[in-house]
Length: 399
Image (cartoon, rainbow, N blue to C red):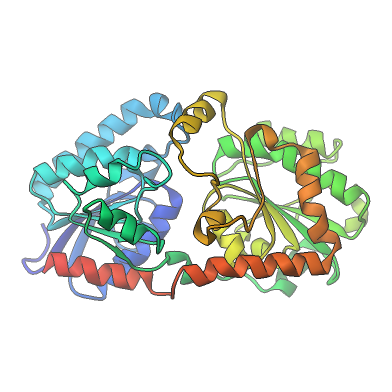
């Protein structure tokens, strides 16, 4: 149970970005006093001292149809967490995003008498806005990370507070530009076209082929353009369907590795990097980025980007019925205007993607105009310190 004076917290973070942001929250919480935290944890939360009850991977689901295949694991995780909550008796439960799971778990925890602190609001403003009103019945405090969310949720009766966006703290390239270029064997003047196809295997399979086809078209007439694909650490490479997609589009030349010389490769043959996502976003001339947190990161580096997304027909059909926004890209939602073009579903073709990226590769003035547009995103997100402010508000609940 821990020491008598310890504050006990049950935490649930169901995907990589939530794991990372929740870990900062836990670190800030430990700085406020003795506490014991356990629950659904990934690598970052475990490194922050969280005791794992359920693995984060058990909650990872992509799209509406993906839920069906994962139902046994999700059901098992749900019951393990409720059982643990009865014995652990936390002073509060911290739910981090993941509405598909947390919107079922949260009310059940509340019925056990556990106060609910929600960190990083589910995007109910994009789908099922009426769920904001339902949250008022079981969420005690909601720490939101976008400024427009505070009045939206308060208007629905939820005790919400804007704490700032966690990306504003610690968003830095993993290495400096000279090191990054050196690792890839790129000369100082080489223009970099960055491709970020997504952090999940399904996203890689959906986005890599049109991205690489567009990159090959652009690089064929621009010998000083290097194509760099940033892959998430958990994605396979070198074999399987993702690698075959890269090999097919690059004309059988495979993918370049660190240290390959430019002259040894055909035009558009991509370099593939891991653990260098932020360096790629910061150093690229422009990027194509799958919709998600990476689009916001790229915008915060003021790098021109095209936001892309493609999913299965069933997921898309359902999304068209429930999503209420004219734009899906986070930079566009935050800015309240199109600061990054979007190519979604059938609009995502190699020709359209190449046409959208070409002006930023070729025209420094066009690139600078786009960078000025993207500055509005950073300005809208407030100042760093989101985790600390959220932790202080949570600690009030625990006292």
